[in-house]
Every structure is written in C-alpha cells, then in structure tokens.
Amino acid sequence: MTRVYSHMNTLQKQRFGWYVYDWANSAFSTTVVTVFLGPYLTSVAESAMDASGRIAPFGIEMHPGSWFSYCVAFSVVLQVFVLPAVGAIVDQSHRKRLILGLCVLFGSAATMSLYVLSSSAQNYILGGGLFIIANLFFGASIVVSNSFLVDLAKPEERDAVSSRGWALGYVGGGILLLIHLVLYSSAKETSTNGELVIRGIIASAGLWWALFTIVPLLTLRDRILNTSGVLRTSTINFRSSFSQLWQTLQHLRSYPQTLLFLVAYLLYNDAVQTVLTMASVYGNKELGLGLDVLTQAILLVQFVAIAGSLLFAWLANRINTKNAIIVGLLGWCSVLLAAFFWVSTATHFFILASVIAIVMGGTQALSRSFFSQMIPHGKEAEYFSLYEISDKGTSWIGPLAFGITLSLTNSYRWAVLSLIIFMVAGMVVLMFVKQPKNETAAIVG
Image (cartoon, rainbow, N blue to C red; front, side):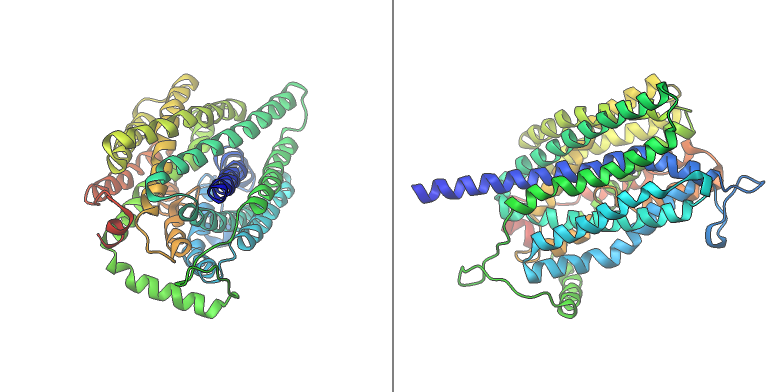
C-alpha cells in the first residue's frame, strides 16, 4: 500500500512538472509568435522598403508583410528535417530531460537575442534569422515534451491530462501577456521609447521560458522499460538515430490510421497555427489596431481558452474525441469566414477572439491526446516529431500560402481566407480516421 501511494505521489509530481513546461513555453508562442514579433518584424521590414513598397531579401521581391510568414514557413521546413532526427535520438537514448534542457537553452537564447532587433538599423534579416533558430528549437522541445505524455498517463487518461497541460499553458502565457500589456501601456502613457519596450518584452519571454523549464527538468524522470522490465539507458548515436527514422518512415504505412490522422492534422492544424501566428499582423495592418488592443484581445484568448480546453475535454467524453475535434474545426471555419466578410472594428476583433479561444484549446489538446493513442510503443518521441511539424506555432504550408496570397493580392483578408482550404481538407480526411477504442486497436487499425 505504501509503495502504491509513493508511486502515485511521484506520478503526480511528474505530471505537475510536465504541466509547468506548457506554462513555460507558452511565453514564446503567445508573446513572441502570436502578439509582438509579427507586427514589430513587419515594421522593421517596412523600414527597408524601396520606392515601390517592396523588400527584396536575398534578391527575392515580396510584400514586407509576407516576411514574417515566410520566416515561420522556412523555420518549419527546417523542422521537417531536424525534428524527426531529434525524436529518433530521444527514443534511442532515453535522455529526454537532457535534450529538453538543451533545446530550451538554445531556443531561449535566440529569443533573448531578438533584443538587438532595431528598425533604425533595418536589420529585419537578422531578426528573421534569430526567430528561425528560436522556433526550430522551440519545436524540438515540444517533441520531447509531448513524448512524456505516454509515460505519464494511460490511454483513457490522456484527454484529461493533455487538456490540463494546455489549460496551465494558457494561464502561464496569459499572466506574462498581462504583465507585458501593463508595461506596453505604461510606456505609451509616459512617452517611453515603444520600440525599446517591445524588444525588452520579447527578450523577457525567452527568459521566462528558460527559468520555468527548471521545474520540469527537476521533476520529470527518464524512464523506459526493456523486455525484462528493467530501466535502460544508452548513449546518443546520431547515425543509428537517422537509420531508425528511415525505418519509421518506411513502416508508417503499416499504421494506416496513424498515417491518415497525421495527414488530417498537418492540414487542419497548419491553418489553425497560421491564424494564431498572423492574427496580430492582420489586426495591426488590416484593421489598424494598436499593439495594446491586440494584446488585450490575445489576453482574452488565453484565459477563455482555459475554459474552452476543459469544455472540449468534457465534450470528448460525450461524443468521442474525433467528433469533438470536428466540432472545433467547424468553429474554426466560421472564424475564417467572419475574418473575411465581417470583421472591421476592434469590437468585431474581440468577438472573433472569443470564438477562437473556445475552439483553440479543444482542437489542440484533443489532437495531442488522440494522436498519443495511435503510435507504436518505443517510438513516441519519433512519432511526435512528425506530429510537431504542425504543432504550436510550427506550421509551414499555411504561412507560405498566407504570404503568397498577400503578395499577389495585397489583401490580408484574402490571405486569411486562403487558409480555409486547409481547414476543410483536414476535416474531410479526419472523418475517415477511426476513433481508437484502446491503444492496441488504434495502432494496428
């Protein structure tokens, strides 16, 4: 009895540490990706425009508003090659905490280095490069973090555990964003250099990410059983990790339901992540909203999303996880249509933000738990690396489509509407995925 209690107590501590990593990394996805960097980097790019209102980084002519979306897309193209290898290394070495710590170290350092970004120097290329590095390591850290879910919860527990993690992430991101809103508003009222404040805000998000990651590094445990039920560890072998990755890609066709869900997820979540990434740019450049108004709207999203995440966990218990995700995707389609046809004022933007908040937490948390039940034992991190190609802020098809549409039409509305293609396509594919009844059935289904 004592041993059982001790095990449960240890498990709860590890779950808490895992939840705290969502709290830690939300600072990057919320403050940096969703709110401040997009409009600021776009403004820096606009300071380098030629007489025709275009920029030409590396000789490629484009609308300055496309630069940030292209940086997001390029960072994820890199992730396509890097993250599966990271996942293979994690599964082989079983040193998840070490790799998580290294990813956060480099990612947060690149984020804090964005402090040097200045419109007066027209160094938008440097800013884009630092963001690409930060986003690459951010994605790698999420691969490692997600792989802990299968260690911390049974299949039937994962909807609830995953939703709690997302909920705490929204709280953490929301609290820091509230602090940043106060700082930015105070700077406006006192005529303080707003650009300097924004640079400090972005850098502080990197510091928050690094400091709170200490908690999961102290509480989580590296553990995996071999066939004899004994914990095992091994050294990191990069050559064999790529070999393992190639074998996984070859054998992925043996798991048709897993493959089908990945296709669906890569489509619909690419659109979701692009909306979250480009929302502040849309509000700033299309509607003329200030960063203080945008921050208030995103802050609303963070806290309403807590309820949305828990609401969809409840809905999944009633109508099953797949159908709950589909309900959320229908909500996302209404968001895109409203952004094109209806939104024109700050009030409209706040209403739209409320709808986004409700559907955002549900689709993201449930997708993570749904996928966790569809991967083979022993390849959790490797499969989650494929999943992460379109997870938190790491989409690439959507931002690329957004940037191309914007450059062709000079309209942020048409750029947003273009994303509905991926949303609908992903939802249609998801309809053909079988709802897992148990972990084994899901894998071989």
